[in-house]
Amino acid sequence: VSDAGFVAGAWTLAGATLALYTGWLVRRLARAERSLGRGGASGEEPR
Amino acid sequence: VSSDRSARTTAALGVATGVAFAVLVVLGLAVAPPDALQGDAQRIMYVHVPSAWLAYLAFAITAIASVLYLLPRTRAGRWDHLAGASAEVGVVFTGLTLATGSIWGRPIWGTWWEWDARLTTTAVLFFLYLGYLAVRRIGGTQQARGVRSAVVALVAFADVPIVHFSVTWWQTLHQEATVFNRDLDVRITGMMAFALVWGVVAFTMLYVLLVRLRARLAALEDGLEERELEQAIRDRVGAAAPSMAGATQ
Image (cartoon, rainbow over all chains, first blue to last red; front, side, top):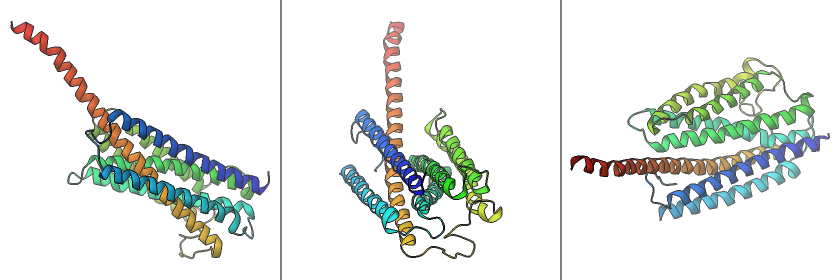
């Protein structure tokens, strides 16, 4: 494997991990907001 | 109104973070020159180093929020949510630090992994905070969880300075810090330094975005849990009331 291959592998791994984690958080947040109804929950605090 | 403004702020931060990362890709992979000794493999540093620094920052924020939660005068759910959110994002960044460092080590050191002081203490850090996240999932009231987690967070944070100074104290395989070294002698210049600084800025923006999302999720989950508990109590009281009325007749 060339240096370029290692670089591409590291950057792709980092990008994919961060994108997947962000997407997972956004999806879970949307689901939680739907469950509670926007703005009406006890325990809610400003974003 | 404030919720809508907050959602708009998060969306704007998301767009700005995306742009910052797009610029980082161009700077790190095309504009910055290859290293004189390491060649192109050094370009891995533009994601490895910011991940490591942001992991330190994330765990420092977790420690500060944990102290604020432990102090009775400042105790509030938001500090517990912030501590948990920052730790989770820190674990993601630490995992990336280990993975990208390992990929860099193969062409430069000739090995994916070595039981070197920096690598070992970083792996310990990763598992310490995984343990912290596991402790947060143990049952109990929200306050019991908050206090228990805060204590664990402060114990785990003791490893952060050990990780940072490991390259100075033990001098095994990992090189000393390029920027925050003993003499504070910054050993990187020009476009390489600019790309590194840009990487830190982009990762910091992403950190803020992720912590906002994760802390908000934690607050909503607590709210949901509270609502379910109140509903369960109402159901129990409702079920008991007719039989109580029957018993008194």
